[in-house]
Length: 201
Image 1 (cartoon, one colour):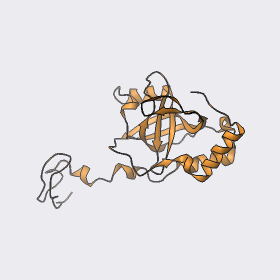
Image 2 (cartoon, one colour; image 1 turned 90 degrees about the vertical axis):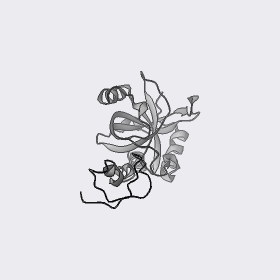
Image 3 (cartoon, helix red, strand yellow; image 1 turned 90 degrees about the horizontal axis):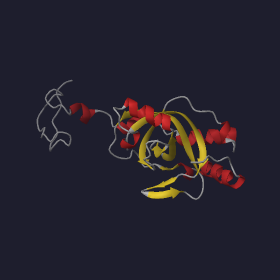
Image 4 (tube, helix red, strand yellow; image 1 turned 180 degrees about the horizontal axis):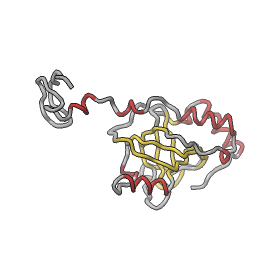
C-alpha cells in the first residue's frame, strides 16, 4: 500500500492523531479505516422477495415450504429471548426489512461451539449467514424485556443454521417490519382470516 494523506483529528480506533502522511505499517488501523463498511456486505435486500415467492407458491400451506438451503446474509439487530436451552428468538434485517427469526436449539449450540463458547445472544448487530430456514406463522415473544407473546401470529423464519461473518456496532440501513410491505401484508391478512397453519412456541 502506498502513502496515504493523514487524517486530521483523532483516530476513533486507536486514539492517535495521524496528521501526517502514513502507511498501513505506520498506522495499524488504516486497513479498518479504509475498508468497506460491513453494511455493504449485504448487497441486496431479499427477505420480502423470499416471502412473496413463498406466498405465491404455497399460499397458506406453510408446512409445505421446503427449507432454503443456500446461505443468506442478515444482521442480528435484536434478541427477543435469551434462553440457552431452547429456541432463541431474534430480529434479523437485510437493511430494508426486518423479520423475527427463531433459531433452533441445535443451530444455537453449533454457533456456540464455533465461536469459542460464546452464545449467539452475545452477537447483537453481528452480520451472519443463515440457511435451512423456512417461514412460520406464529405469535412471537414481545421482547424489550417484556414477558409473553404477541396476541396475534406474525410471519417469522425458522432457522436451522447461523454462521458468524463479522461484528457490527449499529443497525445497518433503516429496516421496516417486513409486514409493512403491501404484498406481505396482504398475505398475513389472508393467513389470519383463513386460519393459516401456525406453529407453537
